[in-house]
Every structure is written in C-alpha cells, then in structure tokens.
Amino acid sequence: MIIFEKAGKNFGRTPALNNVNLSLPEGKIIGLFGPNGAGKSTLLKAAAGLVRLSSGRVTVDGKAPRQRRTRLAYLPEQNTLPSNWTIKRAAEFYRAFFADWDNKRYEKQMEFLNLKDDLRFARISRGQRAKAKLVLTLARQARYILLDEPFSGIDILAREEISKALVRDYSEGQQTIVVATHEIDEIENLVEHIIFLDNGRITVLGDADELRRQEGKSIVAIMKEAFRDGGK
Image 1 (tube, rainbow, N blue to C red):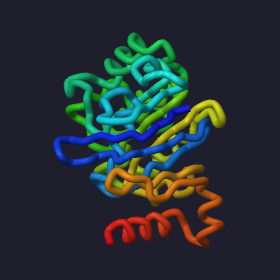
Image 2 (tube, one colour):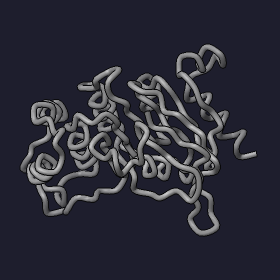
Image 3 (spheres, rainbow, N blue to C red):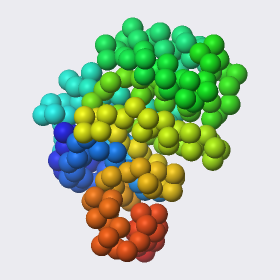
Image 4 (cartoon, rainbow, N blue to C red):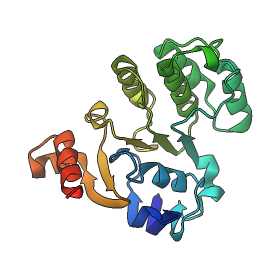
C-alpha cells in the first residue's frame, strides 16, 4: 500500500502538498483529480521516489519509494525519451531495464492501439506519442501504475483509445492504477476510488460508487462542485 503521512512539499514559498494524510486502496483504479497546480503531479512524483518531501513521509509497502522502484511504474506528463528513438528502441530499453517487462502485453497493446514499432518519437503526432508512452508503462507487470496526465493535449479519439487501453490488461485486485488528470469525464466510468486535490489539500476522498449514491450526482458534477467550493 502507498501511504502518505503528514506529507508536505514546498517549492520555494509555494506549497504543493499541505499536510496530506492518505492511504491509496490496493487493487483499484484510482482517479486523482484537481485543477492544474493542485499538487497532483507532486503527489505522484513523491510516490514514485522522484520528489523528496519537505515534511512528513511516503511509504510503498512499508518502505521508502526508492527501495520499491521495482514495484512502481511511472508515466510522466512530459516525454522523457530521446526524440530520435523509435518505439521499438524504447521497448528494448524498458525490456533491458525492468525485470517485470511483459513482451506479450506490449505486443497486444501495440496492436490494440494500432501503433507500429518503427515509428520515431520525433515524427509522430502527440496522440500517438501519448499512446506509445502508455504502452511502455502498461507493458510492465508493476504492482503500482502511476499515470500523470495521460490525456494532456490530445484529441478526443486518442483519449478514448487510451481509456480502453487502461483496462485492457488491468489485473484487477493485483495492480493499483492511479490516474492523475483534470480530464475527469474521460475516466468517470473507469475509476473505483477518487481523490480530489486543491491547493495541496485533499477536499474529496472516497469510493466512487458510494460518493455517487450519497451525492446523487456524477463524479464530474461532484468534482466541479468541489472546485467551486475550493475557489471561494
């Protein structure tokens, strides 16, 4: 389980996380929602061991994230792979670097998303690049999949394909997928648990179906209300 205890992170005088206490439920697809600048990316990076907290701590199955890197697969919002690489070259790199690489899963996702492995990152569309990054991340059999804004800047058709790819090989009950996004409507029907961050604080937290029953609204409507209330 990934647990945050009184987690705080400041960038200069700007707080990105403010005394966050959070346990991410295991074996579920979790929506990490909030406006831009709410702290979503910082939370994911802290869980992945890429950001050092200013206060408090985060643990992954009882240890620091850097000691659990083999259990974590992280997809950054920005492309970090060399632009002159092909998808095949990137897959070879991942295969050599990560022991949990599943080549069959990679090939199935490539076919499902209609991608060719000789495509070069510098010459493909933003949507194709987003899909390729997702395939490389999901091809790992990691226990925790952390996705930072996978829908950012891409068209609606690519977003739909990515949503379907997320659940295609998802090992329910065995893998935990956390999707940080402000595109809530894209995964409204996929998420089982939701977290809403605003100004580095958790303002809404709970089981998605239970929240729908309690509020009598869609997750999108609940999040819009939380955003309006947070802006007062």
